[in-house]
Length: 263
Image 1 (cartoon, rainbow, N blue to C red):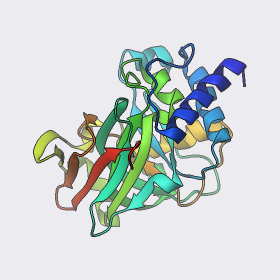
Image 2: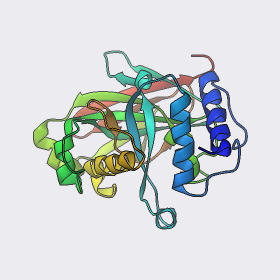
Image 3: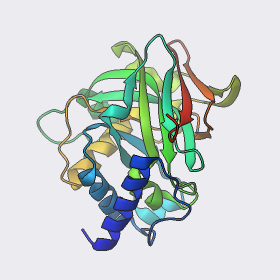
């Protein structure tokens, strides 16, 4: 771990701990994924928070060609992962930083012995539950997505929480690409799509995650949730707004966001 990566990680962790906004990137921006994950790994090491899962996001061309990867990952801490209840869930965000809501399928890892899965069909055997859900993306640094995937990776993959909704029957796992998903914010539809637009889909995201973790020497844990990628897009949101994701034939899940410095 070089000192520059450590300084960036410390700046992000301190900002996240105290709900403070960063007006500028805290150092020299990483230019490749190895540098970016070095920052992320250091940030994980200095938090006193257990990991409860991982978010997976897409890297679009031409960045995906330049970086040699079409996805990225970031940790989701256990204390920021919530199960849906009768009450609408509330998640704190960085007001003045970046905040967005994403409709996603949540897959629970069930690691196996033997080689890692090579494709989404094999990855199904590494999952014991699929649920509908929401990812809360938020960062103290407002330009996190504008600055590109390496900056996104360096600040926890831009994750601030996961909401786990109702279960998807095992018989429906093979048809996730056929399920229309919408996301509304304050009653207005922001996006509509299916997982057919998401590279090789949610199970492909699991396969990518497992390879990434293996390359970083991180042992996958049973019960970790995988937030498998934004289906309808990354929809920016501000404190006080209410988001609802609807999964055709499966149900819906909702959350409200509040300012972290007042939560």
